[in-house]
Structures are given as structure tokens and as C-alpha cells.
Length: 362
Image (cartoon, rainbow, N blue to C red; front, side, top):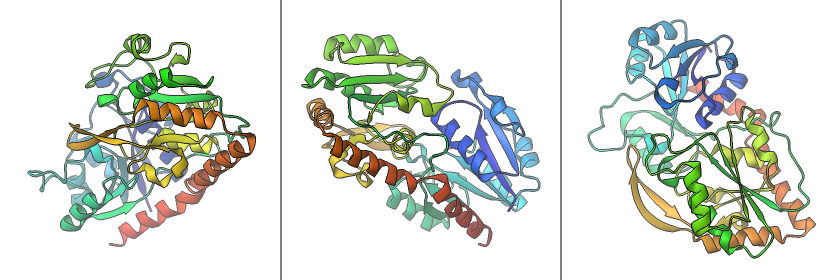
């Protein structure tokens, strides 16, 4: 199988997701997209020594040149040129997109004839049925395969106590996706000596809807949180695995979303993950989940439901885990370790290879 990959040159979650695919699936060709001119993200060309670099969006000619000699092309979220799928069909090359549902328009009225790949891979169970029905109508192969985690890169740490609670704010996302404001407000309801570390990847609020700058988040702590309980860390991290050395438990009250790389990576490091009790988080142990209520709808590229947890409930869960004895701490880290084994590249690479090979035989 001659495999092509369309990757990203930056250090975003999507960039890291595609780089791990590059490292483990050994593509024949890799087109690397640098869109720093649009979003200000730093490019790391050294991560793809044999990459074909495109500054900006690839042209139709770029696509045709790249597809020469390939059997199948894998990308995630975006084709970066909507003509990719049609050009590939003309050239006899299969296409695969591991989508993020919030950016999919194929299910929306008026988009029934929008170019679509030969196979869509769901990274989680979030809205899987709706996408499955659309794929059946359009004759597109649809499978669910989570994003594998690199356990060789993320060291497992056996915690003996849960004292520091890490909130991975990451890069700005629309409408406070990761629930950073909820975490801040929860800090004022803590009854233990639990500490919260909020980790940002660079400055925030750069052109995204309803986001705040780091300074605005700090002001929010003064207004609605407890400054004594929260530490801010704001820096780009080239080694994403180092983030998970900053805490013992990941706190991520996400308002919406399916694929969640920080969750996967935290579990690989032996960190339990506190999340809302909504899809797709319900594959996690019930004891890690916090009740959530429907908040409304927002529009990313499509209309999606959003949820919110009560900051008091979140604080209660943090306190509960802080007070766990050593036996329960070891039990919870072992659960995280077991989950991560089943989502490692060692376990999942054969599943990806099987699905890609099956696609070629269609």
C-alpha cells in the first residue's frame, strides 16, 4: 500500500495528531501544510525531513503532483483544498478523512453534493449515528477509530496522591470549549488544599469567537475564582508529553467536542480525567464524570449542542479525588493505564492498516 499523508507543520493538537500518524504509519509521501500566515502558528519543518511543504493552501496542481504514485491518502479534519477528493477519484486514489464532527457540513441541508472522501473515520462516538446515516446515503465507508496515543513518548507515572489538578486550556477554541471559565469558578468552592494548574499553549484570544486573552483569564480569577488556588502557565510546549508532568489529575469540563487528545495523553501518563457526563466521555469510569446540563447550541460550521457543569459539582469532584487514600489512587491510575494500553499505537496500528487495506479492495 502506497500511503500518502496530508499533515500540518505546527504544534497544535491537530498538528501533533498528524505527526504521530506520520511517525507510526510510515507514509510513502507526506504533504505538509504551513498555514502560519493565517493563524500565526509557528512552523516546525524539521519534524518532516522528507515532507513536501506547502505554504498556504495547496493548489489543484500541487494536489495532482502529490497524488502521483499513491494508492490512498489520509488527512484529518480538512482536505485544505476541497477539490482533493474529486481529483483523487479521477486519478484512482482513495481518500480518507479522520473528521472532527463540529467542522463537518456533509449532514447539513444544501451540502448533499459537497465533495466527500471515500472513507470517513470517526475519532470518537460523538454524533456517530448521524454521520453513519449520511455515509450510508452517499456510499461512503464509515468506521470509528480513536486517535492512538504514543506510549513510548508519554511516560507512565504511578501517583501516590492526587494533589495537583491540571487543566489543559491549550489553544483558544470557540465558546470556551475546554471549560476554562468553569474551572476558574470552581476554584472558589474547593474545601481542600487542592491546587489547580491552568496550562495555556501560547497567547489566547487571537481571532477566535468568544475567547479571552490570558490576562483576561487572570482578571476572571480575581472576580469569580480563588487566586490562591490557581497557577497559570502560558508557553508553547514543543514536547507535549511534558505537560502531563504538571499535575496528578486532568480536569477538563469540555462544553462540546468529540476527539480529545489531552484526555488520551493524560490517561497514558496515568492521570485520571475529570470530565462532564456526556457523549463521548461516557466510555470513562462513571466515578470520574461530573453531571452536566444542556446549555444551548452554537455554530462552528454546523449547529452543535453545548453543555455545562456546575462549578460546585466540579469542585466537589476535585475534593473527592484529593481525599482518596493511596489504595484508591493506585486503583485509579491503573484504570488510566489499562485504558491507554487499548488506545496505544501498538494496539491500534494494525486496526488502521486493516481498514486502509479494506478500502483499497472496495
